[in-house]
Length: 476
Image 1: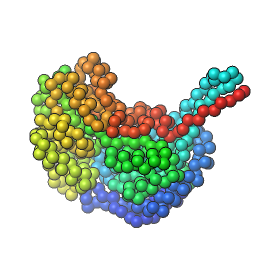
Image 2 (image 1 turned 90 degrees about the horizontal axis):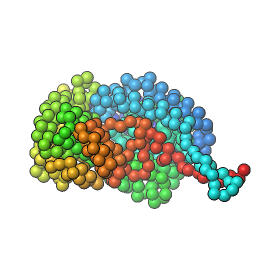
Image 3 (image 1 turned 90 degrees about the vertical axis):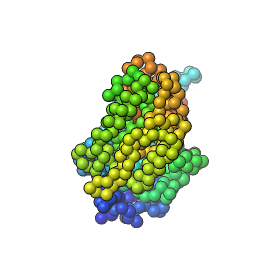
Image 4 (image 1 turned 180 degrees about the vertical axis):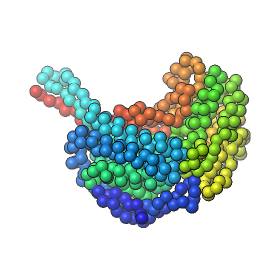
């Protein structure tokens, strides 16, 4: 069977490509249809035709569809989690949490659409009333990455549909399985033809057409900084609305007064779980001198107890790297860190397991400094560096000395230090005594500097991107 693309309410075949399990390279998850340029254009045209009717449906109608989708995800939670672990390499525990999060997102926006904000103002002119309302943007192109193959699509698709937009969805080619299953659930919920369209395939074909097609009114992208910059250049030239979440080189500051076990767990979770394949990962561990040696010793001990293995094995704590290209990139950075003078204190080795897979032991560098490329460039793997700081002031300076600004964390028992850090660190999200990775779907998600562009995702703030404001003046 070849899993097809969903275009204008119909499943359409295409050139098949294989979805490979990174825990077992001999396991083909499935064959999926690669959308052509014509397929992509047809999907966009279908979304454009469907927009007017969908935008005029009542908020209650749209909420009902989203509730059905949420229920469908929950009913298939176990199967979806197994598929996610199998195609992406996230541990089964993490995969289950991600599927649950996807259902929560659809249910949350089923409620939010019933609370779409508006405003009434008194005019400066006598007898005139001002009404401020929100309307859907139009056709929205959604381009998502491989590291969260169901949660990130959900946090884009759910608000897009909730606020009356139609969708053309392109998942990462590396993980089509969860995207196809989600599309199938949306289709089964009875969404009208053309309102939601799935086009799988290459970014150079499908993504490029979504970005450049004048019928696409807005684009929400999560992925690499390089790709995001290209999308922004193309889309902004035709005045499309753009929202982007890109890279991170997130600092976790450990102060002398930190609770050591809590700090170690925050670093372990933030830097290495999900195989470090998160834009919010704690890739720079900035440690005050007085606790440095104890922290490194405790973290190294914790890393030694981790189990790297098949994502679906119950005892696995760190799954495989997603594919051979990502593994090669991780290994290049490990070699680079050594050549730059950092000390590889733990891991960084390719591992053999009963099945052929992309297994890498978590790598921890010490004696690193913030000028090294391993401390400045996003690696996107289970690789973290420890940077020694003389005091809090230097630690804050090092935390801000980056082109990125997505997430930042601090471990301390000082209320004054935590408050100062929250106010002065240059990041869109701040964690105190918590990993830099791990966010709530009810709160805004996004960063500063080179990490993000446009309005925030998730929570009530999603309405900013998926709607446009209309101001009406009325004489009674």
